[in-house]
View 1 (spheres, rainbow, N blue to C red):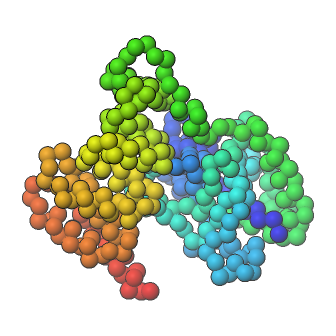
View 2 (view 1 turned 180 degrees about the vertical axis):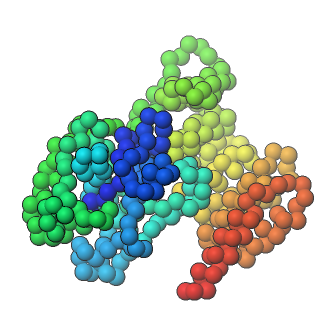
View 3 (view 1 turned 60 degrees about the horizontal axis):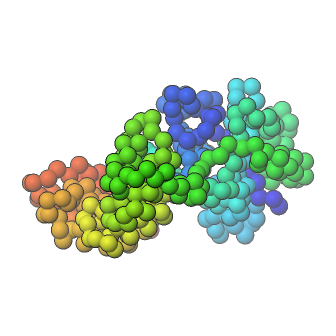
Length: 368
């Protein structure tokens, strides 16, 4: 059986966040009332991967529909995920993932890039190079609806269609696959390449410090050019490969969610000179990448210097507590929370949330 799943989401141009020019529509009651939904970032690469969301009934996706042996597993790989949305007239294919992993249960990861919350859910993940978004004007493939075409011959009321009927496998899937192949060259580029971001600015004799200033000015300007920012930073590194230039380039990578590259830059910077501020940034990166044990190592090192003038311990301590919780180090988390509660010199805005999450996680462990 060809492992193809159809997922119905709201209609958007880019699925890279809500903007004045790109609002989700035709996505159901929640999207209509809140002007957003989990799918709004389905084609916004995050550390070189796309995380796909589709609302579905119940707590799980039935991956065993593709093979009975999958009843004992919580994920299935090498899926083709076809994203479908309505333009107000019909349901059309708006993009797809190839070689994706599909999860039975909701997945969550530590994240503040998208929603400012450490809980964010997704159903699918795929490498960015395997994700294709069709330009709005080119979306033409209409996906049949079961109420009109017949049972097993199209999408029903559910937002997820497994397309595992004999008719779907023999009549619909081959046409869909052929269409997807024909659209690859027409799809919208959804990510930059490392080659593009590695280009240097023309050298007009500026010092590394002057190039860094130009980079910061370009990047901090709301209308700035990302490629120019990187070009200035790259030339600055060439002129003076030091802690400051490496940190700056790490900051750029971090801002666009290229955490592998940011990690490398920050580690190089620290190798050149130990710096608490960079340690804090690297700790955040390790959390974003799910490298919780490395984040804890950094957090405990920073903790030894928590009274240093330049230490942002009020924020770093929160990251360390959530890292402890992520590793089920509940006693360490509770001890640090209590320690911070007694600290009258700083404000710890994360404490109440941390207490709630810790209690919830402890309760879940007891249930198991």
